[in-house]
Image (cartoon, rainbow, N blue to C red; front, side, top):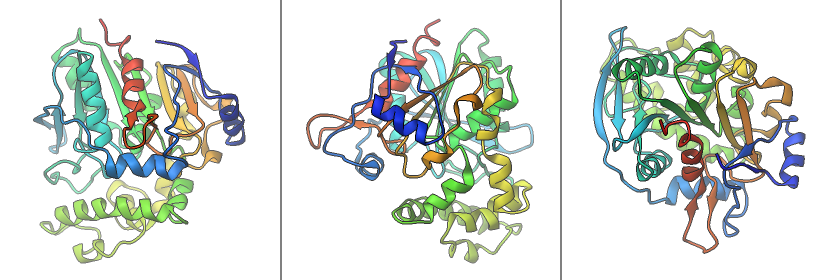
Length: 343
């Protein structure tokens, strides 16, 4: 790994104000595009305007022990294998997913995208879907992949809510067969992050997420008789907290959204992680309040918390020429995984 200390001194001050996190050595310092000033520009530009590469993705249905299934999307084959998890409302079609799959393929590294239950092209069979601590399917997938080829080194990458799943899993299962893990733009505490989506410009992100989540839930429950609420009610949901009260909590055994947020937040478990794990995060993330970043003593011995002062949420857009972006995150993730998957 190319080691360069980052963020800048200014970024370290911002980080300490956000909870005393310790910056880590990480590959290639991030220099944000000057023409995308501010956290919202860094977040919105890649989400709406990025024209991602379109590497070939081969579908697979993985049957699960409980009778449900996962939809997988296999990138070009290569040495090692990176399992990639999307964020809330995301999929293998998300620009950030396609970007990292393409960069890994360019370096000769194999990858497979795991759609969380119900997030692919087909509604899943069971009532449940996925949430921030639903790591059982990730564990099943990794076990299945390890059984197929025990000699192939594995890594896992998780974006946003997928990163929360990943960190919760690593904390609960310290003996996972994973050589390297990378979590990006993680909502460490769910309640403050949901509150951030309910205020100011955060409501734009909330509306963006809810369009996809309502669509998936309505698609699934319009054809079933066991919805927690009528399908027509699902289409009227206007707040993420409301969706978690009406759907996420009852479908996954939580009392309500507050109980879900309390139990599923990953910050409380970070101290248990011993496996090599890098968390890439921007202090100015508009969805994750800086005050929720973990303090220095909260992370386990395996965790590098790599902070940048800027970058937004799953943004990290660089490039000196306006309109010609360079998506730094793709290369950063590949740099972190390449040494672990070279065997």
